[in-house]
Image (cartoon, helix red, strand yellow):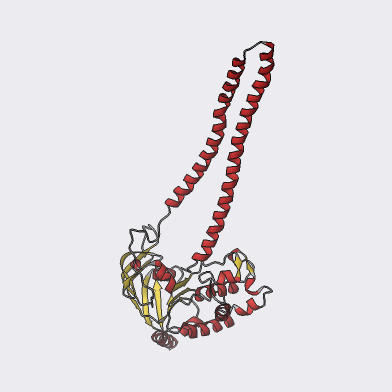
Length: 362
């Protein structure tokens, strides 16, 4: 979702280096065992010669008998020497096979048997038709069922609903992260499941409630999906997300070390950095799940105002419970029990709520 391949490629290279070092240590042990076996073999040969030579001199045994005894002793120990090497190699093969089996058992994303359509630019025209979505092989009721929903590129939409209603699932479905089990979901007139996932992730960003900061510097965390971002771009996105003020107060600034999960940062600081990570990629489609849940009122107001200006013609879908966020949307969706219960312009919804309140007060 974040095009974070470069960071995890770096981590992978680190793991490979560690594995290579382990391999070197294993080979040292293997060679040590083999050398130990050969040393025993040579020591036994020397012992036979040392004991047999005086016997030959005294005439107790013949020279041929001593040579035969030395050869037999060497041949007797040779299998033990070979066994040391075989055992070490067998352990290597066993570990390698287990790792390979685990790797091959993993599901393949966009395998060769799943032809994908490439689309360099996606704008955010979504169309749901009798669509049902499920996570994995869950046999229970579908967590999301949308009969009809159209979203035009450039729209600003708020998704409302109770906890567990299906708001997050809707955003995940729009990223292609939830399996479409029936019906149709189209993005820019293409079937979304047939679009190359790399193209979707390049054009769209999803900030979930489970997003986390990684161990590394602030710069590494924010530029996770865009490692070549300039300092000016970093400053702009940090200012947009309300993070620049506290980053400037840190002694190391952008090089400040962040602990795993953002330990040591407040909830609002973590959330602002996660927003910066999502928006620095400059996506055409922005999907945000409760993006201001940890913000104070002042920070939230400033962020919402700047987001409205920055979003421009981009498609913006926000799942939220915050009234301040509703100020920048034009349309409201309400999800209830996994279904679309309301889809109306914001002005219409507010007028109906105002009229209902007036009736209640009569």
